[in-house]
Length: 161
Image (cartoon, rainbow, N blue to C red; front, top):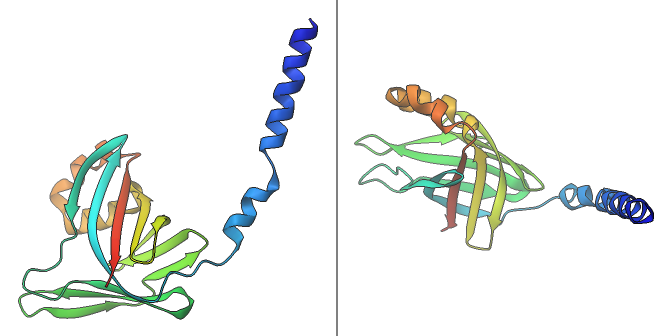
């Protein structure tokens, strides 16, 4: 009986010790991604295991799309489109609080977290549900398959130019 009482007390102690309030302080500090031009490179779909990695769909024969970050985590996304490589600018393309980010991808708001960040690389992870309106609008032929991806993650990778 004493053994069970001891294990119960030990378990309770471990439970309350692991639930400290210091965890939230890490995300309260303001993180600033290095200003400059960040080029999207790959998009990876993961559902338990990586399913597919594709190159970011830059328009052929045009300059590559990029996210231009300025001070204060403000950004504009520059998309090159069409045979004439017309540039479309998307304002408020990147807002960040801690590791949480909100992206403006082709006019669609995508929320996610910065999972990897170095001076030259950044990877943003988002639930696939964040991309469903964008996928439906851009690729309506895939709409019937989107339910199969439920619970998946999209990893969007950038390199600093």
